[in-house]
Length: 170
Image (cartoon, rainbow, N blue to C red; front, side):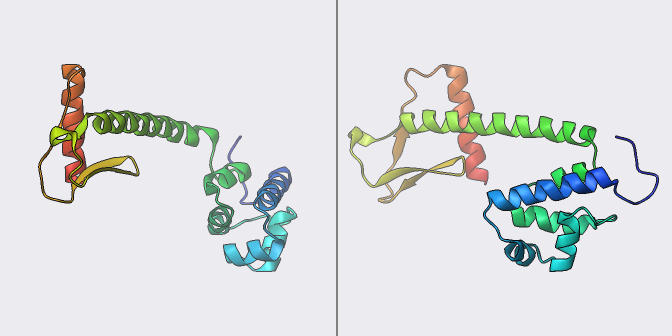
C-alpha cells in the first residue's frame, strides 16, 4: 500500500473499515446505539464510519471503537492505511517472544509446584498459589517449607531458583 498523497481515505478502504466494524459489532451482539455509547462516538459519526462515508476518519475515533469492540485499534488503522503491514512485523515478533516467555513461566510453575512440600509431607497451612503466571508459597503458620528438587537436572534447578528470585522482586 502506498502513502495517500491527500488526507482522504480511499473509498474501498472506508467500505472495508465499515464492513469490518459492523462484523465485529454483530459478533459482540452490540446494537448500533450500544456501540455508540460504548465508544463515546455520536450516532452521526458512527453511522458515517460504518457506511464508508467518513473520508477523514479521526484516528482517535478508531481507538475508541477498538476499545469498545475489544479489538486492537491498530487493525482498524491498517485497514484505512494509517499503519502498514511492516509496522506489524516487529509487533508480531514481540508477541511470539512474550508467548514463549509465558509458556516457559507456566512450565516453571508446574515444576515448582511439584517440588514444593512441607516437613514430613504434612500440610501446615502452606499453599502454592499461581496468579497471572506467578507463584508464591504462602506459609500460614510461619513454619519452614522446603523444596524437593530430586530428579530435576542441575541446570533446571538453577533456572527455578532464578525464577523464584524474580518473583520475590515483583
